Length: 213
Length: 191
Image (cartoon, rainbow over all chains, first blue to last red; front, side):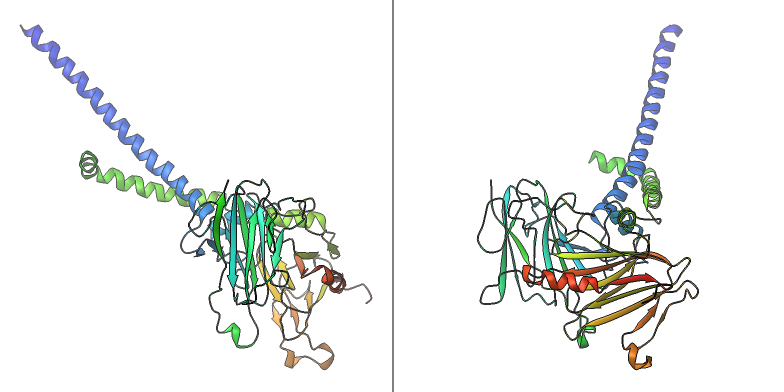
């Protein structure tokens, strides 16, 4: 009888110990997942996508506000040192990048886009299209960019640039088969006279998707 | 409901895990941040001799020295090194779009001068080996023959980049002529 009572007790103890060990292991697993996984993933995200304090967003455009500055935060420094890019001080020049359109869809060479702008309040600006790694997209027309002097304006002072694989009339930037594309907009700040004291937000162009293949 | 139950029973574990995640985040970010010479600077410096002008080829898919270089701009570069001799850098910026910028090896753009609509901006920069302090004189303080501001900068090494926009094919010759006015030389050279 005593033997019969002992066996279940031992089994229960073993079961309880296994349960405790699993409980402990799962807690350690959760701790490691949150601490190491979460810490590294958040660091990667902050370096690649930026944080609210070091990027400025205007529609589809993103600008790193600490770029090229001696007091830049570690995220901005790492973001740009990975890219092998020469940076111009974000306090003195304006440089925006767009990887998405106005409706937050990834820009891709399989789609046609319309970049429309009007009254850009800068003495000189330029727009260029690059592939995902910052390389110009080879094309037979040898068109890679437009600036405030070379773009064809409408009579009302607005302009429209078409990003497309195939030839388009007027302002056309070929995207061929580059895959994911990045549109870069650079503008010079208006630093003459009273403008330096009254810096207004730049009127950035819009990026609309027209169609996709 | 089950997960809420888990959270209420293990809030200390979650708090500890979140604190540890914060520490890992800071450690990872600081471990990968690069305060030394950045890759973009290294690539440009490797192409340019010290204290001389190097005209970068027209930016095309075949001739792109660095990623994200704007293709409607001509670039001239001077890698200045004032360890032994004082270096002079001169440029003229006739209009908006033209600029002269100076970059430290760690990627900092510590000086940027852009052309304006009003007048041609003449720049004369002295990278002084003996006097590494920042000194910018106003135009009013300068003698008549030196009406462009003279700036003494505190860095001895770096890269000066002169940008000339190509506004149309017809203006390419003007851009090239203006690029030729960009000068970078050691003091011993007679001018």
